[in-house]
Amino acid sequence: MTEPTRTPAQQAEIDVIDFCRDLIRIDTSNWGDGKSNGELEAAEYCAEIMRQAGLEPAIYESAPGRASVVARMKGSNPEAGALVVHGHLDVVPAQADEWQVDPFAAEIKDGLIWGRGAVDMKDMDAMILASMLQMAREGHTPERDLIFAFFADEEDGSTYGADWMVDNHPEVFAGATEAVSEVGGFSVDIAGTRAYLIQTGEKGIHWTKMTARGTAGHGSAVQHDNPVVTLAEAVTAIGNYKWPIEYTKTTRALFEQLSDITGIPFDEENPQELLDAMGSTAKFIAATLQNTSNPTLLEAGFKHNVVPGEASALVDSRTLPEQDEKVAAKLKELAGEKVDFELKKHGVSLELPFSGAIVEQMVDSLLQEDPEAKVLPYMLGGGTDNKQLSRLGIAGYGFAPLQLPADLDFTGMFHGVDERVPLESLKFGVRVLHRFLAAQ
Ligand SMILES: [Zn+2]
Image (cartoon, helix red, strand yellow):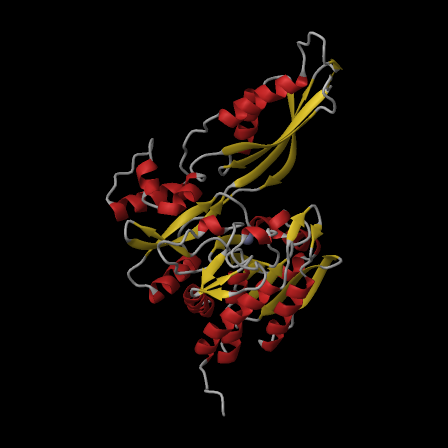
């Protein structure tokens, strides 16, 4: 029996599902602090497909097993700035007993692929590989260079992945001006209208450790300088503080368009009604309307009858663009004079205009597949490897296109239990991503 001949486009819709399942089955769990299964096997898997596409991939190991892989598809115009199309290979760990399925088996159930990484982000990794291969099979040469990159360690601050690559191998990204990657391009249901959210901004990361110092002593004594109490007051003040709602260019544009779609007036002081119209995505978007600061870890004391000399807490703050200093000052003010702050981690905030050629190409490629839909900008409350690439002057967007069923809580599945992605969404995604890449 002979295989039916498929067009490259038909083959890509099959490939994307195979690639996604294969990648999920390579357990790349990242526990943090350098503890990880490693990404080497996944990098080798991607490298093999890159070779099938006629590219020459290079694997970079920042530490044993911690691998990223990059290959460049040469464009016809060496003057044109290159586009980085990137994903990460690692996933957050999964607690198998909480899941309905084996998180690393990539089972297909009810028309969805289930498994860790199905949405974050082996889905997009597979879409990138399948559309890259489709372009090669079609003999399509883009105008500008396309740099395909799959990074290690995104889920733990990118120390062994994009951060390391930018520091140690910036030559890999030579000539690159723009990038696309995860957490954007997916559809949400807004009062019966399907809208795609393209990520044009990311909040900053401002992680601090605060320490209260006092007088150590006996637990039976009268104590007026107990650092546990000082710290508890600071934690309470920061945890209870209500940051004001503030709009950036991105979130203002989003809410104006939400208002147009729903007919609900845009009340700047109280956007709750518009947020509610976004259903399960509301919580995700709410975090982008203000700074946030959440105490996440407490450390104090060692014995029941000893007052310790110091007590400390970790605070996870996420900042709106250009507000790092303002947030740091507010935290100090809330915590009081007896508490010192130490900055443990900083990640730059990003914000790009929702305009220009690359945005038009993203919008067009979505609308060609889904003409009735709306395409809106949004800001991500978390961070992606676009933060790292921005250090090379590369403007990064979140564009991993997926058409999703209206009732699927997509944003809730990132790092969640029973992570899963519909097969039809992946097929849609590879069609859109291929259109977008072919337009480069
Ligand atoms: Zn991710």
